[in-house]
Structure formats: C-alpha cells, structure tokens
Length: 447
Image 1 (cartoon, rainbow, N blue to C red):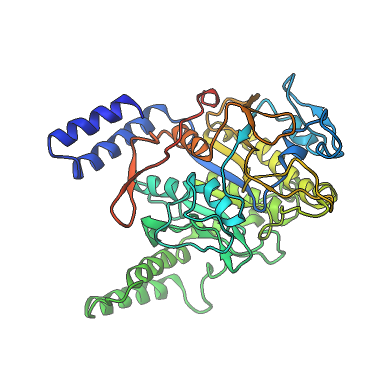
Image 2: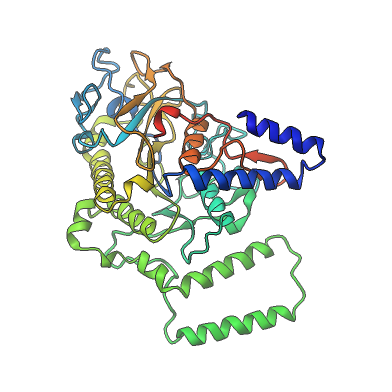
C-alpha cells in the first residue's frame, strides 16, 4: 500500500477522525487523482462467458506435443516478436494497440465463481456454479465505475453502467454474483439490456412511450404519484426502498429522448452495422460504442448466451466455425471504430473470460476448466500497447514469469480511470471499508 495512504490513516487514527474523516480523505484523494492523471474516461468489457481457450488464441505452444498444442499455427502480428493464433488474423493487425497478459491466474474452477473472481477481483466465499447475486456481494468493477461516476457528479440520463445483451450467467437460473449493485444497493444495479440488438425489430424492453400517453400526461401521473406518496405511511417491508429507486430510474429512462437515441441502432449506417457483423455480438459491440459516446462510463458486452465458450467437447471445430469469427470481427471493428472516432485514447477495452482451458486435450477433443493460468487483453484508455506481460510455462499450465491476479487487473483499470485503488474505499453491508482493489497496478501497461 502506498505510504501516503498509510500516513493518512495514521494521522486520522491519532486525531480521532478515522470514521467520517477517512471516508472524506479517501474520496478527496480519488478525485484529485482522477483530475490529474486519468486518461481513460470509460470502459468496454468484452466478456466471453464459459472461458475461451488461451492456448488456442493468445498463448500458443507450437513446440508442445500434439496432446497440448492443438491444430492452430501462430502468426505474426503488427508487433515484431509477438505471435497469436491464426484464428485471429484481424486482431493480429491491431497488436500495436493492445497488450496481452499471459500469466493471469486464480483458484475458482466453477463458472459463476470464476466469473465473479474475474469481474470482482476477489474470490467468492465458495467455488461453485450454483450461486446467485445478493446484497452482500462485493461489486464488480463495472458497478464500482458507475458508483464512482455518480459520486463524482455524473448525472446523465443514461445509466453509468450497462450490460448487453444479457448478464453473466451459467444458465438463466444461476446468475453471476457481483455484476449488480451488491453491497452498494439497488441504485447501482446496471441497466441490463435483455434483448437482441441484432433483431430486426430491436428495441429496448419497456423503454418506449405507452400508446396514448404523451409526455405531459406521463409527467402529470408522476406528479400525482408523488403527491399520494407524500400522504402515505412509508412501507417498512424490506425491499421497499429498492422498489422506489427502481421506479424512479424507470421513469427517468422512459422519459428521456437522449436514452432512446443512444440505444437506436437504426441511426447507424448499414455499412457500419455490417462491419461489426450482423449478429448479436457484433451489434452489442456497436451499441457499446454508441453508449460510450453518449456518456456511459462502463459497458459490458457478453459474448454468448450463458456459457457458450465452455468447450469441453469439440473445442477446435466450435472455436473455428462458430465462436471466434463473430467475436474477432466485432472486437477488431470496435478497435477500428474507436480509433476513427478519436475515442480509443479515452476508452479502455478489456477482453476476458472466466478462466482458461486445460493444456491437455481431452478424449472428446475438448479442453476443460483451467483457472491456474490464462490470458487477457487490454487496449486503449492509456494502456501501452504492443506488449506481452507475463509468460506461461511450456504447456500454458502455470505462470512462469510475472504472475498476475484478477485483482491486479482491477487495480490497473482503476488506476487508468484515475482512481487510487488502495486509497478509495466503499463499505460492505456490515460497515467494513473495502478498497477498490487489493491488487497492484501493472505499471508496464500504464502510459
């Protein structure tokens, strides 16, 4: 932990200000850092639920045995000495813009707990897929980015944190904890699209005006509701406060032309929509760009329904024929589009999954869960591209050099956004203060 944070805590403790004073000092420190050092203003997280194979995409092992290396050859990129899979020819041309971290690791092999560790930066209390969100969760970095934005004065009509097209999950029965408001409360839940932006009749559910209800009539109804609420006894039942918050958010969204315009993909030229790919993943990436342009601070695009990247069987055919092509086209086009619009320098783009996949190919031509070592990619937003951070062993099983944890990734993201990951705190439901991240920023990545 930086000595300045330690000294501040000692001073506050001695002077009896370790409660409110600590919160104020940490908040002020975070604002000062944001005002002076930040390059990233927003984040797009490309998340591949189910866990893509690092060995077949970003960290090939051409000299390993055929029980490990798979059928794909490494190809040269725009950066001499950096090679990635032949499955990624478009992204190979962008290697000077992104950096690959090849030594990420954690200990959860269940999908939902693995996704939690990835997006929260901390382990879940149990390693399991059969878990769901609760108000005791540590928030994801998307949730915290929205919380920080609001703390620092964000007042846009659009929610600061959006997920498209659907939430992280292992089936619709078990949703990944952490991606909602968690301990910060329902006011910091993301706006989850829950619709296919590639659908011919795509519209955001429940966002449009009701037939026969114009803006004046809607405002009159809202005013009447407020008057009735003023003369009623408050509801003491648990969840009533969350209901009020969500009702207010819903009314604000429905009444905003700015919100409807940001989600309106018909405003995009057909050529642009084709470049991203006329599929759910492509249009989600395009929507992410539109939302960032409109002021949203954190957008997660979930590549696939549920755990579609879970390739226990037929890994190679699935990667080659159905999984990688739409993902790569959308990712590469997003980078191109952000560059063309002058947005890449201020938009941090992250590509990640739950974990990696086993070095050893199983008997069904698949690869199983492997959190012990995997790869991630970061670009834009002050990230120094054209690098490989960390190295895995000769079969991609464990970090060989520069081991990186999800917490380190989170610390890097918050630092790029201008926040001190150790000096800025929030509180759990039991009152415990929590740092934004317990990890260490990856200094090689930060310009």
